[in-house]
Image 1 (cartoon, rainbow, N blue to C red):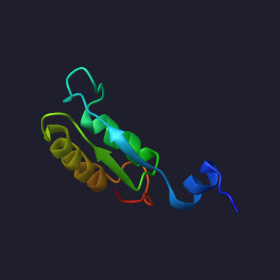
Image 2 (image 1 turned 180 degrees about the vertical axis):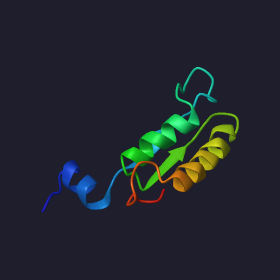
Image 3 (image 1 turned 120 degrees about the vertical axis):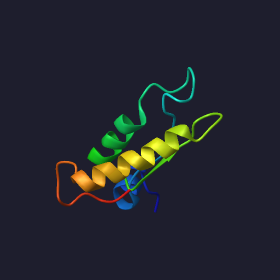
Image 4 (image 1 turned 30 degrees about the vertical axis):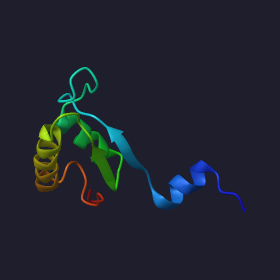
Length: 81
């Protein structure tokens, strides 16, 4: 039985694998906190920040995620990233 993409996403969730912050010069446009807020709002179970030439966006994304967890960003029952 063939599964459609929609059924697979519904069953396993969505994981973003190609995400670049504004620390990837001329490639990414969003600040790390904007990406983390959006992922939190969409209930992503994981996200992959893969900037070029450094881990600056990854470190800031981690700090922003910790801040979101402390503030409990607009809901009590969010999944953890």
